Image 1 (tube, rainbow, N blue to C red):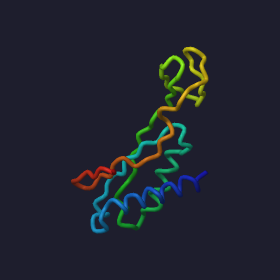
Image 2: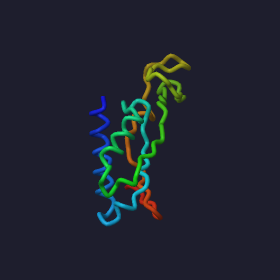
Image 3: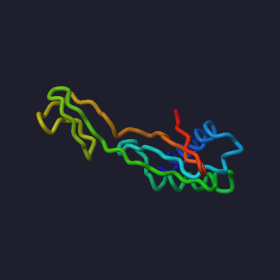
Length: 122
């Protein structure tokens, strides 16, 4: 739902405000994010929500850049790992169900890029 993306966009703006001094907010150009395929986020909807929320604010010159993280599982039985389009947790190699999700559920801000500076997010 769009409400979901809207609240995530608000959280992103909060993170930016916590990491960037008020007098530098106008210099923010890009907020880089990692979003997993299973994070349940519609990227276009998130980008739109963000642009609506920053309009007319000191952050109006900024946008979010999304790095898509694939869903990958690892099998504890045969120790191989596999990208997995559908979120199945059965090992395609040995059929084991003792698997762990390695990546694909991320939803995080990794970097905030200012006009001439890059600030790492701890």
